[in-house]
Image: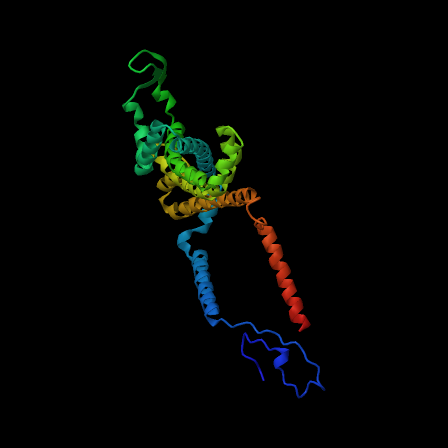
Length: 326
């Protein structure tokens, strides 16, 4: 008589009439059948297949033109501009965010007020407004100077020479990024257990040493995933620098689309694929950074993709051996 799925037959419950003539054998546990899961999986596979079929066969996408434009020098030059603007803005934005977060945690009411006001202002103003305002900054201030307030100036700068297109883009992106990075860093610092601060203070360690060697390394476990989200957003935000006459990846694609209106769709696909590549590379770096800072916080480090693939292959082989033995 067959047993229902999921049932476990105990040897003690087996009929005792044939125990003297037939040896008892272990009964295999039958897994539960989940028809709903198989139905949903089949529907998802059908939808994915239809989407891929539509992408491959629809002539509107013009994949031959996509291949033509993908590695063109104009597109690659715009990609380099995007990488440069992103890298500089990420570094300056993170440094500014750390300073603002420390200002929010400072005992000085002036530093707390200034840090809060800066964060509030740049989180409220759209990035494109900041970029356009900086692009026209020379109309408000012809020169910039350092000196005594309401007194003589020691050093004077010509703003029109300093404000190149790349400078305006990096400054605008960094100012905006610092406001968001400040909250990410502050949240990471607050996530560190208060006992860590008290233990460091009990040892008589200087405040700067406490932050560099005890608080900040632990806060990075919380800062890393949140700031990487900001970094991915920063990569996409560089598409706005074309409004300040800087031809990044999106600006180059947009310019070529105006020159070749029949290739607008393949050019947009080129930009889409390059942005996917950039964000995917950042996600890979995020995984290994998180894995590095997870040391000491977890019993075992998260497996790498190669280790996951190897474990899955070993499990598949073990299942085949069990099936063959039965």
